[in-house]
Length: 452
Image (tube, rainbow, N blue to C red):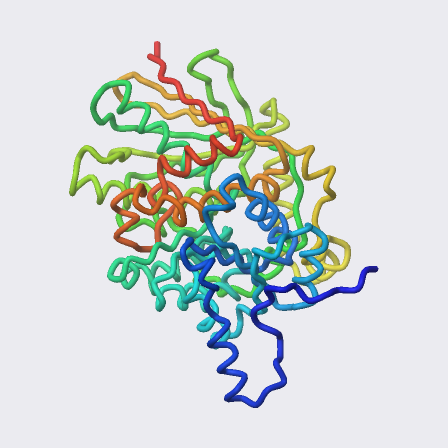
């Protein structure tokens, strides 16, 4: 065990030991970057010492565009921040910030210095709102990794309208949930427009997820808190178009077994209910609603059309296996709702801060195939593919690229994003994020086919 030496750029000691007034003065003087940082956009990463936070730290600290932005790592413990510096071999250009997301006073002194806050501290319904509120109050942009629909619904209610008034960009769900689900239909709509030279309505869009990955203690901890949420909140968040500014046509109910034909090979993909669908579908429906409203201003903008319907599933290889996987998921989730089994699962499953080994992280994979069909007879097959555990390795670079889309490409973002609001990955970043992911090594391909 090494001795932890203070990092030269530690900003906020947990306690200065100074009288209250002098302590406040120190916070005030250190809350802003040095002159060498102030000329660059500042990315503040909250939760840097958590399992996912460490992965995001690696992505940002050694990023190909590292010279273009300043990086501040935030965490509750000075010792753990310094250990992170040692563990990853971080250089002294990276600032460290002791900050507790539950402490609004600390947040108010830390966040104003940032250009964009990247928040990895969950459960977000417990810890996320003070961060969003502080960002909104100080016109600092915000991205996170939440998949908690009921909390997104709450911040839309409290923060969307004020954010449109001061231009703050707030984008939840910028990881594996829900960027592929949200971005691939957008890419398909763009491809159809390029192919035909005009807007084409999409009637149906479905994504097939083929993944190999694992689950961290932090994600499990979030699942364990679900029974604490009031049932009416969960019910409201699960309603069709719960996050959308407008209501669309009736969506197909989730199925026990899925079957979808690929437009190029005519191969049938079979699968099961996808456990992330309750988070992905509402967010995608918000994209639909925001883009339809935007199209009313300018019909040339990318949008999906009034008959748009979205669904997704987990690829299993056969219908029988798909049925088995769907029923197994239902059984496992029911165990989380029963207090005695929930207590037992807490004892034996990974704890917060735990996660897959390095070998497991790198051996994972993700392939998401979206098929979007138009009434005109055209179909678009769009594929997003990457190596690494999707929930953690892939998520870490997706959310990093989302934050950098704001920090480095603000002027290139869609007009909707630059007006501010609680947005989605597709509506906030659009083509900017797709290009950054491609440059980061994510395979993204899209092709139009004429259906028989």
